[in-house]
Length: 237
Image 1 (cartoon, rainbow, N blue to C red):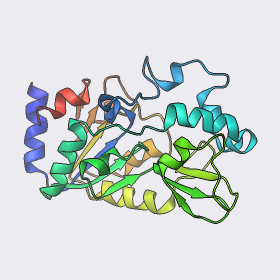
Image 2: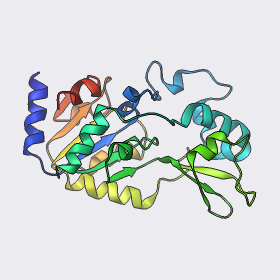
Image 3: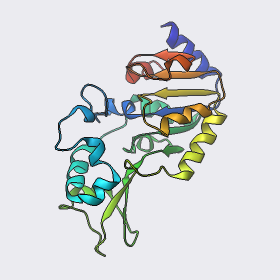
């Protein structure tokens, strides 16, 4: 309770909060994460998930890629949870500067957050690789085999695959927000995926809060560490 009290005090004093979140933010909405005991990377597939969601595999075997993508990475029909909703409220109150997320599910925006920097893209945006036409996530979900545009081109999700670079503007905006933050809350992420995890290095303040069920490589650098579920904590905020 002492740590929760400390966090509440910092929240009341802060005017430029930045929230940096990973897969653990959406698990309470029913979307599985990647590295926990029940996570995607612990499941058995014909190929390792890291291989399937790589750029080279997508080019080499698009049929298998899209079968896996539809089954495991296209979270449609899920609703924001308490964490998403509290963050949206903080933004409306003028306390939250931005959300930086590794998630691709669009739940922050669905909860009402406006300034969301999606480091790894979004399943809600899909473009033809030939003509650039936009297609919905439902189009990709319902397509048979490899989704194709009316022009014949493959419709690729705007999701950053392994071997692909992060969007430069998204990185710049994320760095700028984190550098301005007077309170940085990092939650629901193992902080093992780079370059995303390295963004924390741009924080200049002394109120770095880490919320994660398991330990992370950055725990020793944090000013406050809570090894609890996000939902439990955010329900108290």
